[in-house]
Amino acid sequence: MRGRVAALYTLLLLANVGAWAWALVAFRAYPLLLGTGLLAYGLGLRHAVDADHIAAIDNVTRKLMQDGQRPVGVGLFFSLGHSTVVVLASVAIAATALALSSRLRAYHDVGGIIGTLVSATFLLTIALINLFILVAVWRTFQRVRRGGPLVEEDLDTLLAGRGLLARLHGEQLRVDGVPVGQLLDERPDEAPEPGGSCIAVLATDAPLTPPALERLARRAGLGLARAGSVAHHGSGEIFVAFATATERSFPDSRDLDALFQAAVDAAEEAVLCSLWAAVDTVGREGRLVRALPRETVLELYRGRGR
View 1: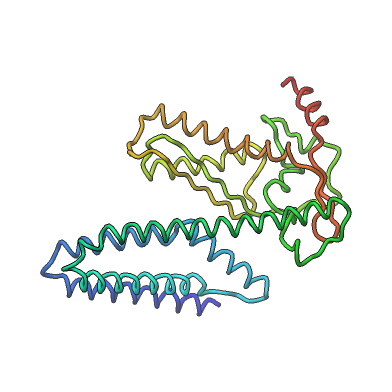
View 2: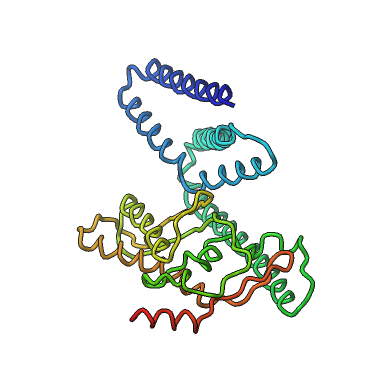
């Protein structure tokens, strides 16, 4: 294993050194292009650790490890596949632009409409597929609640009881600082395994820059911690934030602190509201996960002078 890892790192190092050696030779008379290449290299490194990339690589790696394998090159082959697609797309765009350079103006408006329609159609198609999946899952859930049979193939990943909310419905749960999870007498007979993942998406109309949005997204973890999450070793939380404002600016520290506070409060409230609205649920193999005992929680909360 160590030999494979060492060989992989050596290969990556040689590839980077070779790429920059080629760039220095090719762009020695064009320092502007060399600077542009350095900028592209830095942006590429930043893009490599985007949340969707990490999630995809992590999921594949976990699956292979569950199958008894010891994957080493998942990230490398993911990057090679991703880069190949980007390079081929860039070549196709450059060749098309060169061929149509004399008539590009005539295609500009039409291309804009077609591109928008393709993007919108793709997103709407994905939304429609997810809607059908949601309806199917809801019907299965209702059938099981009415005492119908639980088909493993239909409910393989539904309500497995190993996500963030299932973990918090135990000793970890805290409500406004009150350790409700430790005070509750009603706990599941079989505690869920630590781990699972949570995805938090924060939306704001504040005109934040991308760096400010990254800082805002990180505050979602503080909200989860307030509710009792400790981000177990097996956790794979992903936090993202976006702004709907058309202009971007970096607010002063007071405004930014207020947004940070709102992000923490919103993440905590989202978890608690989800737990409060939950009902008794039957998962795989007839496993029953009971809802949070609301009245008992309120009594414990009031008993602490809240």
